[in-house]
Image (tube, rainbow, N blue to C red; front, side):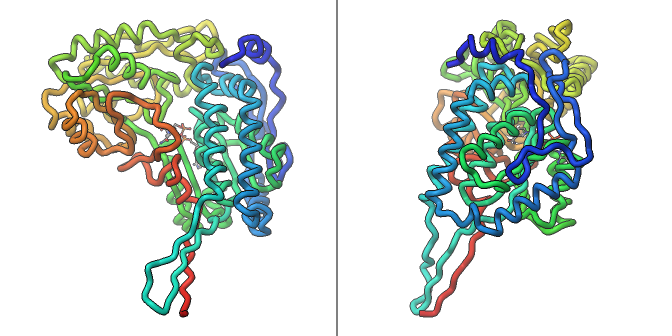
Length: 495
Ligand code: NAD
């Protein structure tokens, strides 16, 4: 529950200039100066943060290397690591509202969603992986008589984590939780437009007793700090959530340097497929609208392509239009707001460009399509539905990462599958049908990391999230997330 009085007190509080967290201490940039942190709520300068340099990244990597190699963290018993991480999760929970408000002022997500999805979910994620730390076993191989094959899991070493701006704490915790629980040390690079809360939770980690150098956070530009992490000979594993072009650069950097393992969680153009036999079309319209418009569409798994069976197309689009138009695009710090700000002016311009292109092609703007609340000085956009989209259109092929829904009609199940699978992406999907056999056929036929049935979103920490095709590789969440952070070592013994 959000305490409104506290929220009012926090919303305009001055924000101190941010600092990197390197080797257990707050530290200012070594020579890169600072960069302004612009609030998308009103376009004002919230504070400054270091414009990190390659030297800052190197200092953080060297601290993480030393902390890993001397065993101050990897050498602890898993139960001891668990105790520290649980304490950290409690501290994140205890500061949940402060973190949520700071995060909203930094990235624009509506507070009703940010509170649960950011600090509360990050604390739960850290707790989930902490609890698992002392419940993972090695293996004894079913080897030939006279031999013993043991499979050890060893922490992989120094992890570089590069994360985006849409859910910095949630996505950050998906990487930090399993990496730290496994015994790795980390250098984290937050996004330029969403660094403040990750810096804050790194300080809380130190308060919880995480040894210095185990978690380091370096702010700044991707092309400088992110690239230095990716090129480093001393980073063993690189985990990333962000765009495809950056993912490609990270793989290239790995190939140029030390072949570090690179795990990518990339974008999507996720199909939300509504059949005429959906159990409840009103519910489907409500959930589908939230599946694209929450956090103003800045969600990797957003259901950004709506595939609707032609017989219900017009009626369903009308329902969706009324849900979209009832959504309140407003002050992200008002708990009644259902869609907050667009993260940056650049992202807003990109969203509007996609709409302009669709309009120029003669597609129907059912609702929205424009900037709103311009006098606030912030970056806001009306929930937008574009109908009559062709599967080949840019709007049906490329990720907008904004509140823009492309509607495409279909006639048969086969056609729905072909359209659903007809992009480079494969992150998420949904199917709305009361036909059990069809639901299972679609789960198998649609190429995606997660297929929802008669719902959209909300898959919790117990299940993996990862893309297929050009949506990435590897998985966050669930016990499978640990695989990225362990090396398997075989001991082969002659008895
Ligand atoms: P982005 O790729 O531009 O940036 C992501 C991170 O990479 C940032 O921290 C950035 O500073 C860093 N970066 C940028 N250039 C870099 C470089 N050359 N070397 C190293 N690091 C670099 O993406 P974004 O705009 O921050 O995020 C939006 C994208 O992220 C969307 O495409 C979205 O779909 C994707 N995303 C995916 C998921 C998922 O789970 N699959 C979740 C959220 C967002």
